[in-house]
Image (cartoon, rainbow, N blue to C red; front, side, top):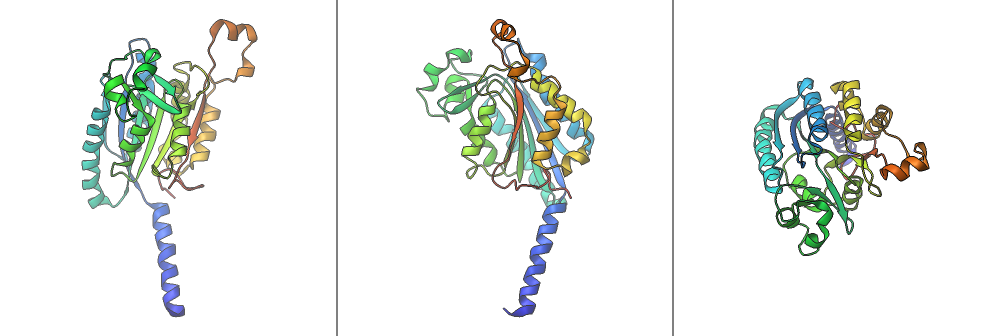
Length: 282
């Protein structure tokens, strides 16, 4: 190749790296929540907070939402609609296309798989879901049991045409979603997950939403865009004043409440390199 050829190749590598670092992002938001009447107000907080935050950024290209009637097919349809718009925008802006999905609902764990409660299926009460889940493949549980598995959710996200997906979720045991996506990081390399990590205990609804609200009210969009995944996790922890550990609760209090407060956690997988800013901003 020669010294000159090698130098040209090296310059293109540097240029490509620089362009990836400073690329702007077109943001598309999809908020979804599904509850049974007991938690409606708390579950809406996560979607509203994140939707309003990104809207103020001025980078929102399109936004959509699903309320009450959350289903896997409905989720696919909404994402396809946003993806169609992103294809059109990519041609004109050349920007990175990022989908931000917020889902709040009830959650459940069985056999190393996390399930989100969705509309439909025979088992609307997730406490009686085990009998149903054992009868079907994880891609069928949404329609048969009213439970959307983390495996199917990962496929829905990964099969979209977006460059990156930021997935925020709050549900009982949603920390298991982190574990599920870590295991499948090679299959789903463009997804980053922000979730509550309470996979071993019962979650207290509303705590995680309030932590996120404090966080997104504290920072600007520009700070968020330039932050790395680890930096955002650190800020979430500092913002979550309501989150406590088991050591903060008395034995008597634990015996009475039988509830453990949840913590926040962010998983980073695949193409999300260490030190990379979350939206590719410089």
